[in-house]
Length: 433
Image 1 (tube, rainbow, N blue to C red):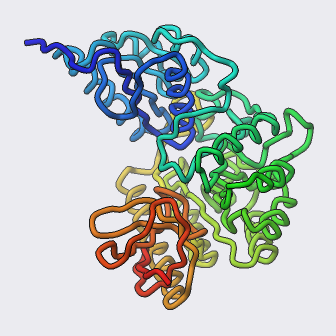
Image 2 (tube, helix red, strand yellow):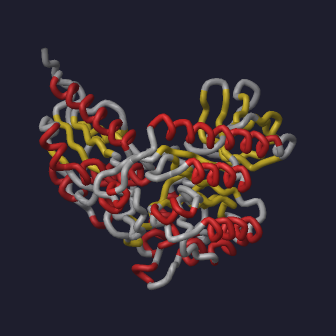
Image 3 (cartoon, rainbow, N blue to C red):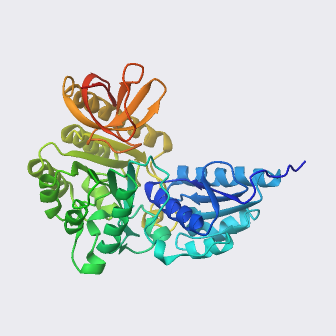
């Protein structure tokens, strides 16, 4: 029996996937709010907009399951309308319309004006760069470019996000000033490839110049860099990281693999030798830099020898932060032409081996912090603990610092000096000083 929805004319935006989707949802919500719409994020509403991810199998499955769940709500009368946008919709719109026709309408990644029109809102150009934050108000993601020109064989991002285009420096400065005015203290720069920034607009890699502009904005205290690419890395960035105190000594640079045959097949444009030399340069030019990377195991043709090379290299490089994923065979990518010949159980075994190695490295790394003081940004209160982060840690993906909330009172969004008194493989425990 259908039950009438009780949250009339409330638009519920559900966000799946990466930080770039978070950014897009925040822009959508600001535009809706400006047209007088009642909009919420992942709460109850009779109109649902699902911002999907279509990157790898797990993400696609989560997106499809979320759509089906909302369709069930629609059929039972708890929801009136369901709209789907984002990467999955961009990539598989014809298939989705055929398989899940109960969705009211599908939109791609660049269809914001059309989506707004269907929702009864106008696209307001004067709001470009303004958002309703879904993150805690003291940190925000800043997308500096969209799309990607890199030819990586395994990646479907260009199919969903298109070619690389940079956002002009002036617009990014304006956005950052808005964020700082609203209380944002930490700025997390994101793009498919930060290091490509500016090539299309200014005919040269311009990330260093952008960073110098952003550090001048009052209120912003930390700037963090996510998703650099190793081939053609603009080394003038290192000087800016070293000399500008607002820029965290932190770099997220997904390397994917290190065995030369795999790097060549992945079309990464770099070798093991050049990658290792680049990382050593990071550490020599920016002492104490925290390097986060991500790796793929089980890529087509990955032999036991290739994996041994990767395993040995992870042990040698001792990354401060590392994530690992099993290869996902994605339609219409260059690697899809290859045979997905590494069995799933072998992929999982290799992933577990890498993460066991990294767990010990992270343990060793964290033991060095016992008794030391760090400036921490307090993100939230969770149970009996405050949860904070050092400059070494990005939200949701890295280590956290736990502070006993039964003995201390801290204000969320504040920077606090914390002394580390305990350390596990992935978390620290501290007390305010």
